[in-house]
Length: 119
Image 1 (cartoon, rainbow, N blue to C red):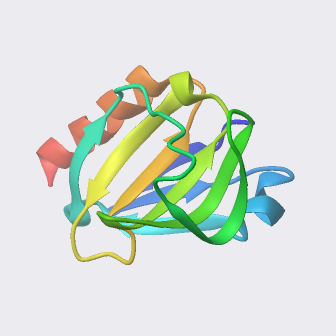
Image 2: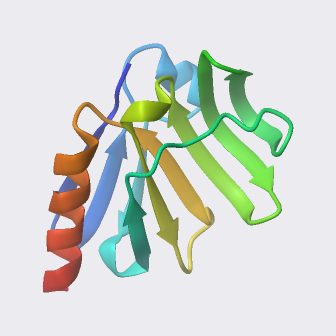
């Protein structure tokens, strides 16, 4: 199940839906746009043993929801289908990256990049 990302004022809001709210142990995440360093639509890999689950759910190839610790720092995943995920790299945030599944990753990435260019 894909989540939604919306822009409200100067914030980017990641909304998690359905059962994923329980699995990710979060309903939403709000990040100031000024903390977004980059947005990528590159395919995400599962890397089942590259990250340590802090809080959430992980079943490689099926679901990865919640907080995971990697050599890059703390990451947040909302992922079922790796082909539909965008990756946001962040500064000055709890998470170094948010990997988030959306219905149309190219459109969402373009919308976020457009908002970033206006900040």
